[in-house]
Every structure is written in C-alpha cells, then in structure tokens.
Length: 123
Picture 1 (cartoon, rainbow, N blue to C red):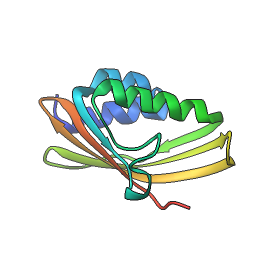
Picture 2 (cartoon, rainbow, N blue to C red):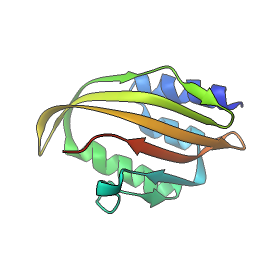
Picture 3 (spheres, rainbow, N blue to C red):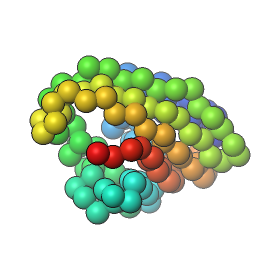
Picture 4 (tube, rainbow, N blue to C red):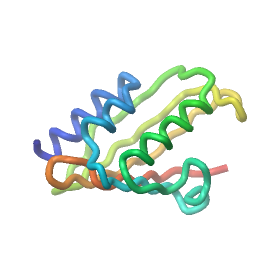
C-alpha cells in the first residue's frame, strides 16, 4: 500500500468517525503519537505503541458528550509523509461545544503509519 493509499484510507475512515478502526488497520504496533508541547505530558499527550494510542483515543472519546461533525481535508503527500487538516465540532464535558482544527502529519513505513503529530493553537 502506497503512502497515498494509506492516506486516502485514513481519511475515508476518519470522515465517518471510525478513528479506532483506522488505528487498528493502518498503524504500526510501535507507532508514536505526538501532541503540541503544551499538552505533551497531559492525559492526551505523547504516547508510543498502538495500545497507548488506542487508550489515548478512548480517553478523548470519554471526554466528548456529543460529536456534531468531522471534516477532513484531502491529503498532501510528499514521499513517505502526508498531512491533512482535521476539524472536529464536538460538545466536550469540560468545555461545552467547541470547534477544534488541527494539522495532522503522518509518516508511513512498510505500509503502516509509524508516526503521527498534531499541530493546533491551544487556549
């Protein structure tokens, strides 16, 4: 599977809110997930390994009261890297309804995502 194929599959699953399925299918067992510096050490911070990424996703879902919508851009592919813009419209337990937009960058190796990193403004 090429980087572009991995990217398109991730986007298709994310556009339908099937994030955990995407992780099971497309992520390497030793993948890493990196957050912006200000939240790197928090409960949704940096983690290594698919099990930790799945747990991080579970914690995020537990913080969501209602998901109103997900928008995912088409990918920008460069070699074994791709990026997308993802915007979530959700009601969060602690914050109420919020719109979160982030740039997501992925590295693909041996047909699996081995690295994801998120960039967004905080606060």
